View 1: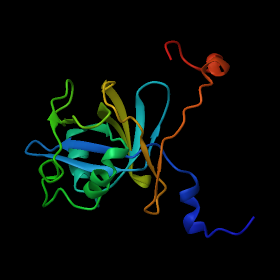
View 2: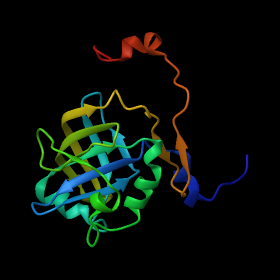
View 3: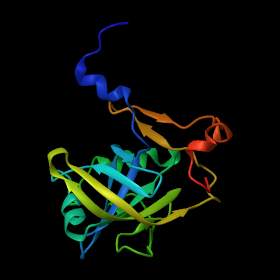
Length: 180
């Protein structure tokens, strides 16, 4: 093995898929790209990392709600574009041709072009690490969508696309909750 600079260690532990987080601050909708997220348990409990450097952070803190929208590989340039401009001076829905869909439980919009959307409420903010803990309150999945491969950010400007699925549900049955 060779030595790896510690500043690159985070690229070895690739997180979940790239997500688009929508918010509504009471006046306008916004969307930001996030690559640092995690599932907290089998229930719809999640955590994301963001902070005051992102325009959407204030809306997340004030309204305590958002939508996690899951884009697929055909939306990679849209996801990267969203992440490289600010909602402070850009209507990202218009700029990137995104279609808003009304949520059932939160004011923030779903994104119709995404494979899935999870409406969430903020249940905790861990300021020391800029972690926002979310509870899912409704979820939506477009099973008719032709492209379903997710994208994962390595963290250095490169991405990994989902590939072949390997099924081990039977082998893991004793560890999975009923219904999975």
